[in-house]
Structures are given as structure tokens and as C-alpha cells.
Length: 244
Ligand SMILES: O=C1C[C@@](O)(C(=O)O)C[C@@H](O)[C@@H]1O
Image (cartoon, rainbow, N blue to C red; front, side):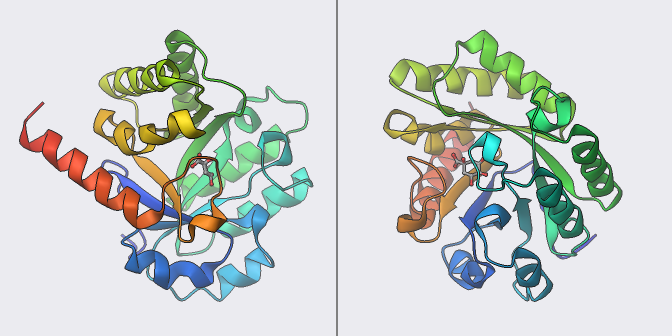
């Protein structure tokens, strides 16, 4: 067992950042992990090589075709392959559509190789799914979480919520997937989805993302790190105490 292990049976609060120099501030705001956005970072592999922080790292190198900044598909996967060798990297984010081959811009064989290397190194694989337009109906959300669970150890689903009905649908899908024994992480993007970031953990969502500095949010509607920590801890403890 490494000092950098993450236990996704419990909720993990990740501080999203493009700079590992943010680690002390993330730790102070009581994050459990740093989500290092390699696609947004300057010299990401040098930063990783020089990392002397205490928090485990979730390595994300988001493809441009999935809303990120990484435009060179082969290069971004190579970088991820190097990242998963690093001791501090406890989890790697791979787009579900890269793994299942459903998008032409992805290099599916290489993405699967990265997944295999990650597993060999004991690194958890997060299969992520983003919808920057909408929140589909519950049945579709549930199906996406099922597919994500087939591709990764954790299925992560971020959708854009336009109203409270969308938020409720996302929470319902989270509840159903968790009840079916899947490990999932869900969050609604945008103003109407914001509260799901606080509430989804009550329904089983295992990862929350928040910026160290609110000015550097990596998605619309993220709460500041310390706020999300406090709200999630309060809500999940209250629910557990009421034994529901
Ligand atoms: O996929 C996700 C979730 C996210 O998009 C969010 O909505 O908080 C933030 C990203 O940094 C992360 O990689």
C-alpha cells in the first residue's frame, strides 16, 4: 500500500488545478486529492517529477474533443502513460468515449494500453463522460453510468443541467447506479446543476471537484473547495446519523 492510495469507497474531494504548487493550499482547504489537469498545465511531466506534496494525484489530460485543451491525441495519451508510473498518481481519468471507441478522434488502442498500465500499477481508472449541452433522461443517464462502469473502475458523469428536473434526474441516476453496486461520480454543470455537487454524494457519488481558487474553476458551477468540503461533510454525516 502506497502513502498515496485513495479509497473511493468513501467520498474523495479533489482540488482541480493546473499547478501542483497549489497542493499545500488544497491540503489546507482539506482536499483528499489533487486533480492535476495536465491539459491545462505548463510542463506537466516536469511538475510531476518534482512533486513533493502529500496529497494523492488524479491525473487528467482532457482531450479537446471532450471539452479539454489537449489537441494532440497520441501525445496526451503518452503523457498520461508516463504519469501513471508516478508514485503519487493514485487515479487516472480516461474518457469513456476513448475507451469504447465511439469517437473517431480518439486513439482507442492507446487509451486501452494506458488503462492496462494503470491497472498494473494499481492506479484506479476513472472512465469519464461529459455532456456540455444537456442532461438526458434518467434511463439514458443510468445507461451511460453502466457503460462507464464497464470501461473503468469508476464511472464519472458530468452533464449540463438547465433546470431542477435535470438535477433530479442526475441524482436519481446516481442513486440507482449506486444501488446497483456501481462506483460512480456525478455532477451537474451550470447554475441549475450546482447544488448537485453538494447533494450527489448523499446519493453515492464518490468524487467531487472544486478549484483551490474560485477564479480558476475547471467547470461551470463548481463551488470553492472549502465550501464543498463543509457542505458535503455536513450532508453526508447528517444522512448517516439518521440511518437513511
Ligand atoms: O470531469 C471533471 C469534472 C468537472 O468537469 C466538473 O464538472 O467538476 C471538472 C473537471 O476538472 C473534471 O475532470
